[in-house]
Length: 446
Ligand code: NAD
Image 1 (cartoon, rainbow, N blue to C red):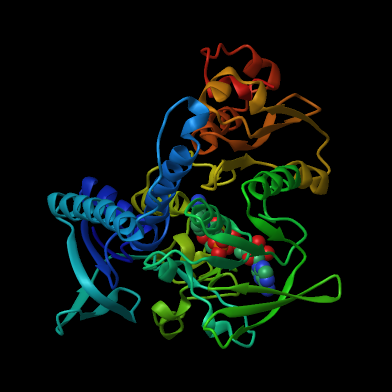
Image 2: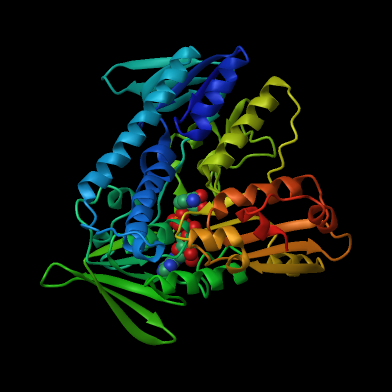
């Protein structure tokens, strides 16, 4: 069977590798660098910056550990060079794997000719036509902006990832995942950071308890966060800095900044392909798909950011796997209702399953158990005691329904709870599981 995959991000290339492993003849078309948003301008580069930021924090706090260290400041060009090296290494790894799997990789922009044929305007100036039995589309998303005067003065996360200087004052519009990760990194780098969020809480899609407490934690680190803030415009000042105007409780307010980051969400890249020409239905959320990620045109599947929703790399990968399974008649048990997600602030935050608010909305009676990292021996020895854990369990049968936490290694800790929720474990069964001492995982034992 011949399969064409359009999009070289974690949805596209991972699925290409799996399809080739199963014996399909695969062509992967990508207009951007392999690895997509995640590798080139998202997950990986931000985590590289986060690590440099952690080192800066450690050095600054070294005396508290009884270690003499003097910080000479953050050398941003070297931080960026390290980030580029990591990205380059991983991209090389993907190229190697695709070559080894004999995936035919075409660099260029694809467009549909018909439901089985794709034309590619190759980057080297040539053209190619690819015909296959099925087509997978995973062409991702683009940064959204606000329709406000002066929006062009703000940069998006991609531009900030190649900043050549640390802004003295950074204003971040949007306290979602991207906004908070960058706010946290640049605060550690020494910037004065102000975050403006339209909703009542930061991370509006997360458990409210978690959002409130994480906000307090980030504020303690010196990040100024203003919620219920409706941004009206950005103006350039005579000295080259920017004034961000917003309204809070009917009162006009303003923030002065040297750099403004627009982080108000991402939208499916619907302009990436001529979907309408061959009758693929699209909607407000993105390309419309059924439960198996098949579009309105049989044999054409779409997954990842292009269909909207979670917009997470790991979700795109598993959606692609499910589409491949459906195409090749393989049964799987992937549960798209149980998706762990992490925010790489300092400290990290993570979530899986239902929040208390969602249970309330759905009328599910729940018991919520909470604990703190400050009571955990390992966290104390690490000097990272700021953190909170909330476990949501059904009042009816004790089943674990959700877990929401922030604190050291929250992004890794969440997976134990994801596994237990997926296996329909009860709180009592969880409490019978021996956890090693002294570990951060013990903090989960609410
Ligand atoms: P988001 O939807 O997570 O957050 C956008 C934020 O902007 C929201 O809090 C929203 O209320 C706020 N906002 C909207 N309009 C506003 C306005 N007028 N003024 C002030 N605030 C406003 O989007 P994002 O942070 O841009 O991230 C995009 C996608 O990428 C998300 O789906 C996210 O999950 C994903 N992502 C994930 C990770 C990760 O997994 N660690 C990292 C980065 C991005």
